[in-house]
Length: 165
Image (cartoon, rainbow, N blue to C red; front, side, top):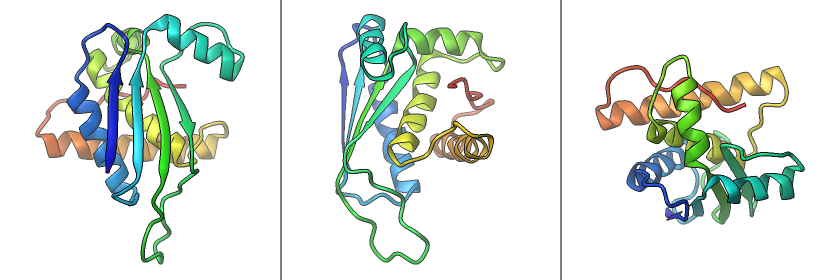
């Protein structure tokens, strides 16, 4: 799996954890090991510009996903998952810090960025949360991936509750 993490935000973030949880999520979703992903960490001003440009919404947001080859997880009967360029995930640590502090299960900016990384991966794979049934599926899968990764890392305590909308 080729995953690049590029921190352009000026904020210190746990880049290794972002890389590790992205790799874990993609493996769990059975994405081809030669697929490529880019994660970019930006400041609030850059995120706001992207949010306006692509969503026509004001203010910075927490995570944005830009799919490339529209890869999907393989079905249960598929022998080999297709490989390709997954796309880009853009994260904003300033928004993540606020969301983590405001969450019912208060957690760190880095924990929120890990959650948002999984959220972004799922969006790249075609998952969405516009409809209640889609939201239940996506957020359930997101929680299972984050919980599985945290258990594998030996991290204790409650997992961050979903704060992305």
